[in-house]
Length: 199
Image 1 (cartoon, rainbow, N blue to C red):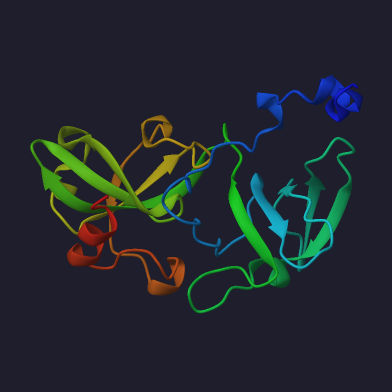
Image 2 (image 1 turned 135 degrees about the vertical axis):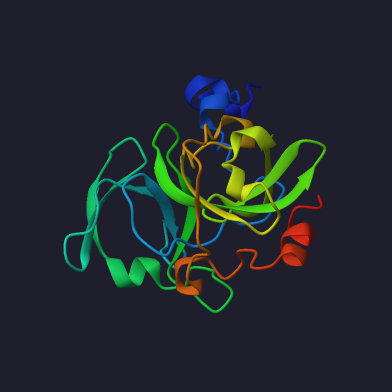
């Protein structure tokens, strides 16, 4: 008597290609819901019968944004920007769940110096993940930002699942961002950052 799995494509064998792609959320909780729509962001609907992920293909035009579904048919869709970005007080999406950015794209973002330790700077990139530490040599930071609670602007590949592959550069010291430009879960003090990156 043959096994039922033999009727499936590939004989029912598991394939790595069918597994979900790794994201920064692995073991650290969901990433923050974005505050702006950018090409390369990936989402999934929360209330649809078929929760098919999709990727934003270009920046919004007015109140509409274009996307393509990630399955084999690559169906093109349009969504309302406000509905896509709608989030509750904890920063979780109301209608859509943010999955991650697409690897291989660079984004302008902020970095926060959570701690200085043994010649290393422990950074937090709130747009990547507010609870994952990013360690780099202190000498790579601008002299004015080589202290805890400093803020920087930078460019990074936010789609990478590992901190070592973010390829952060260039790092430029800046003033603290306005609260509305940061996710609710972003660290806003040294104590909060230390707690967030203590894992």
